[in-house]
Amino acid sequence: MFGTILISVCTLMHLYVFWRISTIPMVRRRYSRKPVFISGFCLWLFFFLGRTVGHDSSGFLAETFEFAAMNWMAVLFLLFVSFLAVDVVTGFGFFCRRFAPRLRGGALAAGCLLSIIALVQGFRAPVVQDYEVRVAGLPRALDGTVVVAISDTHLGPQLDDRWMADRISQVLKEKPDLIVLLGDFFEGHGSNPETFIPVLRRLTAPLGVWSVLGNHDFHGGGNESQRLMEESGFNVLRNRWVQVESGLIIAGVDDLGRRHSAGRNHDLVIQTVEGRPEGATILLSHTPSQIEQAAESGVDLMLCGHTHAGQIWPFGYIVRLAYPLLEGFHMVREMSLIISRGTGTWGPRMRLWKTGEILRITLRCDAGQEV
Image 1 (cartoon, rainbow, N blue to C red):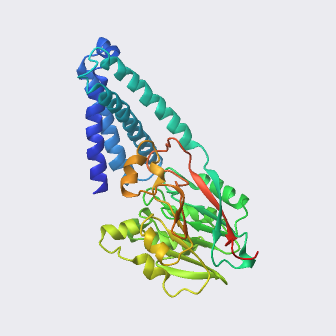
Image 2: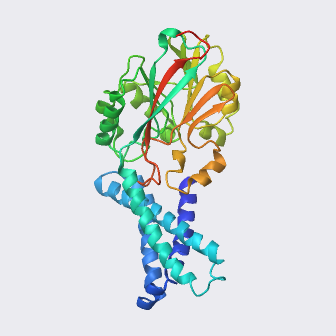
Image 3: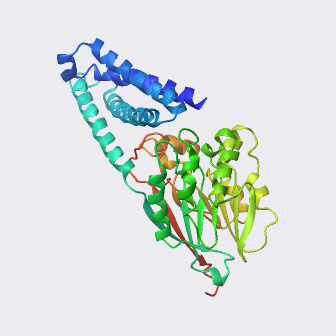
């Protein structure tokens, strides 16, 4: 269903973008509309095959094909946004009829420039984002505990074991006491994921490595992703809690967005944290959903991913319709909420404007407690 919707939307964007390109004076002077639309059809076919054949195959050629097609999709989106902005300002050419075609030439240049910037940003290493969070109920002995969180790595055809090895080096450099993985760890298709296990076994911390499953991790039912994580030494939390240290509980839920689409999303967070002992509670949820329920249940810190903060501006405005809290730190009643914009990328290896991130969270005793 998602693939069908994506291809349909991109088909409409191809029609619109190449229609607008054909009206640019510089293009009209050199070419008739026929070669412009033939070029558009060839690029649509390139995208379609990359999304279907490249996506469902493995090997260097298929992965390269998919990589190029997904990046073209992002370029197409930025061209679409640029042309649409000009059309909105000019009333689709009804106003400023003399200058509207020239402005479309500027839109073409702007879309290309934004695409270059997004590609550069997408290949940059994620930054480490520091937070200091006061947590009610945190034992004095655990004040200063460092939690490092990574999210949405989408390991697979585009982000390989070498890329992940660099991210592990970044994580270990922060000297974490606890490492958490916020879902969509694997892309779910393409190369043999077994190749990641030797690299992933380097990811260790004194209080363990804890993970939840995201929507991509459920490709094939979720059991395969869980097996790969467990063989890598990770502890997978599937709708359960664990006391990792006296006074520190970590809980995790399966992807709430997936459960919502299946009609099984009701109060899963509340059920997951029931019966836990006293102390500080950290909840891992791939999707930033059931936030109010988590706060009502006495969760102290909720960590999420999934949104990618839109990944490519201005797509974040669309994502915000589904997830009003898109990224960063928020207070929800007495609960701290941090939503990661993702460590890797999905689809295009492009980001605009912010790079990916790794979260470094220092836990502090509540202000009313003695340290």
